[in-house]
Image: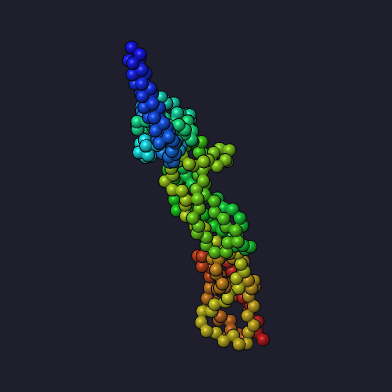
Length: 308
């Protein structure tokens, strides 16, 4: 009996030694370890369900997440980023608004568990989608050079279509482009961004909006107010060697093209009076081109021919 007991005891001791040896090998030779994975994409589940309530996912929140997983060294060595899934579920959302939803991270690899993530929740934005058309207002800022006059701004388009969450679209009161005309002395052509404003004049954040155009080309003709010398024009070639010709007024204030450098002519003058050999005066009409606007009530000047 004592012999049998000793044999049984020996077997038990052998089993214990084997178990301890296995545990030692597992813990020392194949210990638990962690590994990090970055930029795991977050997938949205049941997004199509939102359309049942006339809604659309405007902003899914965070798009990627970093994860740490744990397992035996041999198991962890077999894991890659494709083995890890991160999801959010929007199936319970049925009203417009912003919601904090859980980010579920998991893996199907046996022996691997998720130990840590960057965050557990993310904010999503859900709303109905609406489109409107808005006329583009063009405003100027700054002043042209002295004596230069800017005309009315002309845009490359009159209106734009804006699409986005109704909560944002409903706040849009104006679509405006601003063009700077500081020190302008010639025609201005600029590409100007279009900005959206609410009734209070505050700029609206457009990150959730799409616009048929985000900028507009603006043209402004620039004219100049200047004094033009009046130049008498004659019907034919007359001998005026014995006359001093005096024009009153000598100069006419006019609005011209910005780069205009010429004078302003009279209509052709007929000088039948030269045959008398005396001084005489004529009231003559100015020849005003369509692109020049004179700044006096009458379009005539006095031309005096003073005989020496």
